[in-house]
Length: 245
Image (cartoon, rainbow, N blue to C red; front, side, top):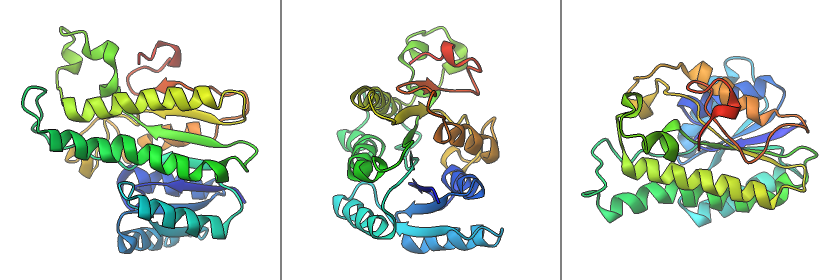
């Protein structure tokens, strides 16, 4: 049985991704900062008839928690096929490049960048045991330098420099990791799930959780000829070749 780890999987998009992967026959480890919340999410999915699930305490900002999660999953399976780096924070709605506190930047980068790098590095050896390892980093169209350098583009008028800077950094990490793994079976991509109605957005948005989950899982299930080192935002750019970094 294939296996997957989804971070931030106790609710929202992460929970939907865990559900979809379980429906695809994966054993899914639901990473959650609160183990109780993770266990509640597992119970919710089991009520749907899904059984191959386990909650794992995982705070991506804590090296100790990452090591413990790696030990737990490593003791349960000899390899991991999919890693979905979904856990992320916005840093709040009040953001300005001239006024944001350094603590605000540090907090957001700790989760959205350092947390992704820490979890990925910790699980690379398990992923390397898979015949087709896949890493999906959850990004956003708001990370695009191309779009946000166009000051006249009214479709992208809202600006959250702390959050956006963290996701732009995540995109670069994605490219560099894919480059280093280019001669291996790994596929590493950054994917925007769309403007999704969840707690993260105050339940505003143009996409449902179901749509967002499907967009992410698509890149977790890539075949051996699939892309790597790319950014995909299918809500905004249906043709992947046009997606600007």
